[in-house]
Length: 276
Ligand code: C2E
Ligand code: MG
Ligand code: MG
Ligand code: MG
Image 1 (cartoon, rainbow, N blue to C red):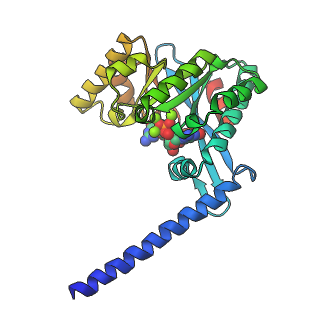
Image 2 (tube, helix red, strand yellow; image 1 turned 45 degrees about the vertical axis):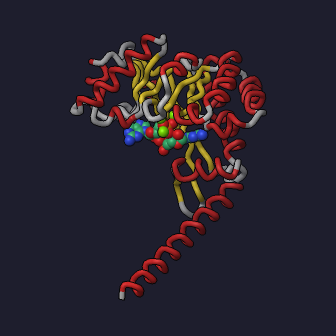
Image 3 (tube, helix red, strand yellow; image 1 turned 90 degrees about the vertical axis):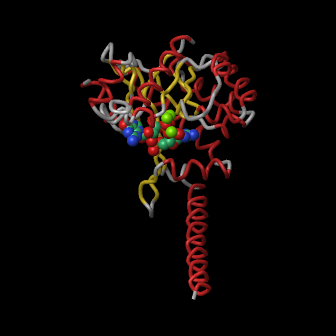
């Protein structure tokens, strides 16, 4: 009996494995045509300065409208594209579209910074700096309005290489931000050396900030440390009035999250800024 059920489990396991592999191959293949078929698009989430009560920036986040499956979030396809190398061209497409949209906002009188997520797989390509500079110059925007967000864990997985390329990007005039901060085990000595202007506190620390004393202490420590290093801080995942109040109390005056707005398409974003 035990044997039989073991065998059934294995059959079930095999079946679900097959389904996973089939789904993965399916996504991988359809991703090849996603750019050409205009299936990728960007949504933007405002970054708010609580002190000045202004929208000072926006983060570009990719979405994939698959003709059969429908909307697919990046968590589902970015890692696949990193494994296949497709992330490189996708990343350049994101940068180009985001900068085009930002330039249009500037021309409409809204001067703000755009943040673009960049994964370590993109940075590893030796053409990255040339290609991203080319995109920016072609469209014609000052690099100080373009911030590249790189996750802390990506930086820490190969710190010396990361430092070299981040310094080059910073020298070219790009802004840099350390995304998902607090989850990547960086040491203070490296943090000091990183040319990033901004530290982005991971939303896992923000979630219970108004009721969990430990999380509140962690956030307070990150803020104090950032201040000591002359860096700016922003809290991601600010969803409620309690989050905002606690962050304000801790002197974290820059926030991003559902409380102010979900990520929205550029036309809606423009309306949001117009009415803010
Ligand atoms: P991230 O860069 O940390 O982006 C923040 C994520 O949190 C976004 O998820 C955003 O929609 C979500 N979020 C924003 N406010 C709130 C909130 O108040 N509560 C909660 N629960 N979530 C909130 P999204 O758009 O699904 O993106 C997930 C991740 O995928 C991003 O994390 C980023 O690492 C990656 N990603 C997105 N777009 C790109 C891209 O163009 N290139 C690369 N390389 N990665 C991207
Ligand atoms: Mg980000
Ligand atoms: Mg993040
Ligand atoms: Mg993240």
